[in-house]
Image (cartoon, rainbow, N blue to C red; front, side):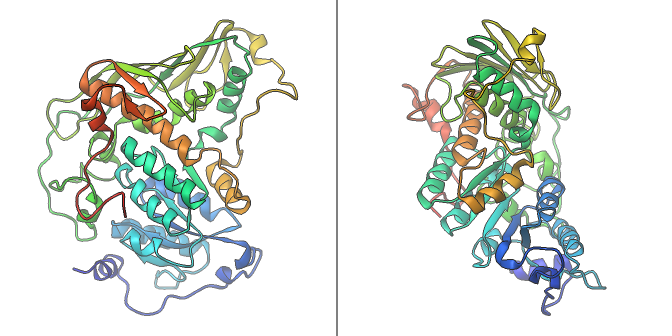
Length: 434
């Protein structure tokens, strides 16, 4: 079945023209089209809609004009939400003013798009982002940014080569507790930084379970969902949110939550454009069943500046320990705590290090930078370096030995076996080369 036919069947739409509402043309209080950034969204799942689409719809200088998803039911729901927001929905529930597709290549190729938002499963983050960058679009892409180190290097290099604005869509750099935490550390308020402790959630309780093959739902383009990943029998336990427990598509909580809190660790350590020089650890990987990412783990990274980073599956938290005390956030987004009250009250003068942030969160920062052409608070290189920290941690646990890492060459030192795990073969016809 051709993708267009599949899409129309899934959405229940005919071949008639789509209506363009007055709000798209700039009527009412919305800025005129010439002052709005046109955006296409790839991925309309729970996070794609609940965070990305709703945030973009709330920005007066953005116009969502295209949606893409391989799940026709999710695409239909997102289209209805978008049409209702813009006042474009017809009485029969159709979707005026929107371009809808199940193939992201059709969206990226549109000449009327300024920017693309990628909110797919992890194994689909880089290819659409790369294609959009090469097509002259600015990109905001969900975290974790990549599935492999090689993907991240290719994407970051392309963003630089084509001069595009790129945002790794993570809200942690807009959260005041994390900004304050890292500024205290970067300005020496705890003395010389010695140790960083990061806690992440454990994996799911359903490890070890086997799931029978199921018929592919008629509204779901499963082959396109797999994309560059190896061919595998369909089960709903493989797809949508559950993909993150399977190494073909993600890296478990180490990459999912690590993309948040390990990013804060790199930020506070002033190594966000570099990385560690060693990594070792242990992980508990399921021996049977569908899910195969580490549910429990304990990793130790060493940095050239003498700092040790310890990451374990003890629950979300982060703490910086220095020669003069400690500061930390004991839960996700909680208040900053310290070993002494005077650390929290430390004034930061006019010459202090102040970190780039945006209280309006990642989408506001992205749109502002599309206009100014400045770096976002989490550009591609930063997202790539954070993801790399996660990936080399998984590699060290899988190999079961201490690894020496070169953050300049982005290779392991004298370890071809580990180097071979920095990239993965893609199922044809997909390729980083386009």
